[in-house]
Picture (tube, rainbow, N blue to C red):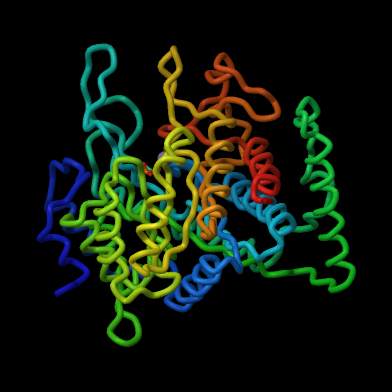
Length: 438
Ligand code: PEP
Ligand code: MN
């Protein structure tokens, strides 16, 4: 029988090597006493909207840092993250002509799965950085030792972040039609500059028109949160009873299972199958079709619309050979899913200098293929998933400002995966408008 802690009887992947297990137990118990971060009603509302997106009536925009850092829990950073997502969503509303569901990788995206347990530098070997929820990024033995107190700090900072997000989304962001929000000077050299400017000018005019027709100084903006449900002690401590004997993970609206923990017999699938949140599953090139089908069956046995989102991340070179069969298999099973494209994680590569990066063109190419394949298979691509930030970082190559390998070291801030910067993210939204048209 499922319980919030029944996962404890299953093999647990990605468990940090805590030196003090009683301290982990104590932190978990403290978390259990603290209030939830989100509500059952918000979660049910999101699930209904995701069902609409699967039916082509809405579109999901999911985005944010690969890993949030504790240090980024501050006014400027939160405001900027929200604004770029809002701007992208305004471009998408205009281009796709449907309501956008905004979901940030925020207020809890603090834990990272790692392929390598250890990292070596200058002949020193230390445990890998696993996200601020678990250990520190600095390369010294003290920082890299997993510390259970971080679970409480992470909970606290997620709560502060969400509190500020709620304040901002309740009271409006000011005039988003204002030119200061839409500086497109960076596209000057792009062959698509005119097209981009036209879209932005249309969007600004539409916002201005709306404000004239129905002046609403404090419009409420709906916004949801998501994170990878990786640290099951954290997730299950914030799992609480709801109506009708159901259980909800009240630390986030939309938890997902990452590629490294999508194990049918494992702890993560056991935990996720029992909660009533909508859940997402990352689908990568190494996941056999048969396992994908069984995972879907385990996660959505009642075949509820909106319950299961499949986030495919095959990579631009593999998507054409893998996605059509996946679409057909899921359809043959009668499994209702929302298909969402993550064009980031299958396109990671390392430069000759050993820097992890992604190319704007590969990301866009995978998106373009995603739309085309779903269209050809009479399926619906109902969402996109990006790793991005509003800051002018130099982590991904290309885009209108033409970032090159030698630019990467200038402002590479991500502690894990490379993100689109604010300009690249906005350009990506502008490009979706084009690649989705067929
Ligand atoms: C991620 O979303 O940061 C991630 C690790 O993704 P995946 O599980 O798809 O590799
Ligand atoms: Mn990532």
